[in-house]
Image (tube, rainbow, N blue to C red):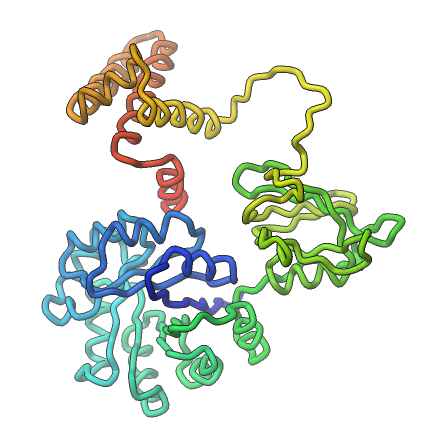
Length: 412
């Protein structure tokens, strides 16, 4: 499969998280944030609500800065002026975190012998090179070719205007494109322009034609829409061929309204859009399962899901591990925010971080001891004690399960 070019918008301004989320919804492959006064707190705030990678740079001077930015949620760090001061930071960062997380920027206008510099960066462990210029790339085609040849690294180029994308890609043969436009731009529209020009990009492509589906008596396809994280069923609706193709093209759920006899992009009136994460057809090819990120509520009544009226219900144990963990964590957070007299959890919070850390350490030791005993059943109790105290520690330090699971997913 041909390697796809990533479209990476840069985010600016005071509402960084909002801008990053908007580009996530718009189909960006990653977002980039550069600030000479970059902080781990800002990176964490941006990264927590997006599903796409975050590349961060600016103000990174040493290995400790690299660690803070990556641990805060960045997928990659971009090293710039710090490399000119100490080239070994590239090797240190690459050895510690892996080359795939290290980008080195090269200013084509000012960097002397850029090809030799690129070769050295590759030797030291850079995973990708970001090329920047204020003069435009027209006079640099030959140099970029040399950089690609001697370094063997993927090349990302930065442009200030999305309108230049196709021309610059043809000129440079870049692997990735960073769009440093101050004004937002339609990412999916740009991707379709790149695709029309012959470049491989990540757009939604259906593996089956709508004509291969089995339609109902009205000539429509039934659609079951789910929350992509919780799998909660949000609604059931219908699609015509036009609605399906628009959904695939835009990445936003579009249905056909039988009452109004017209196409209906969910959210156009309410702002409660549904952004596609996946579309799956069932074994009979007559029902589509759409997993989406729901903005606001799916139901016109104001409920998150259209399915909120119980008709028959039997009590049962919900043993979904993540839901259990989240439920216990929520109780712990509630105790922290609304203290309850006699609560052991509140006792721990009152004693402070040292007491909580002591308990975590003790419970970890108990797991080790239990694991050495013939009866492994004891481990179950010790692990449960440990996880509880670990969640108290997480709550004390303001860390959530979403952050932990996101980190595990990145490592996978």
